[in-house]
Length: 62
Image 1 (tube, rainbow, N blue to C red):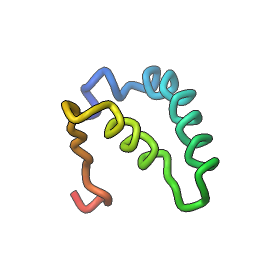
Image 2: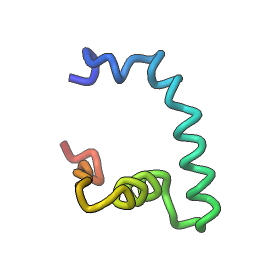
Image 3: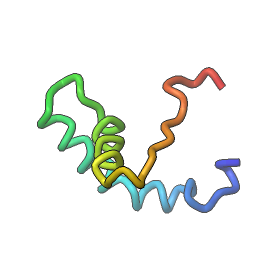
Image 4: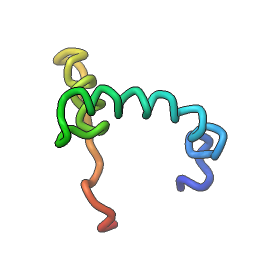
């Protein structure tokens, strides 16, 4: 599915790199054990009770 979805093209992935870099910088400010994914999830949770994050799997187990 990802191979055909426009969101996952090389062009879009490159366009998202500045956002990912920003998340990594924020994570680094909060300690070695904090990941960019945790920062992103915390941001979603902070948007209010009307927003419910649906995290994906934590591994590549398929």
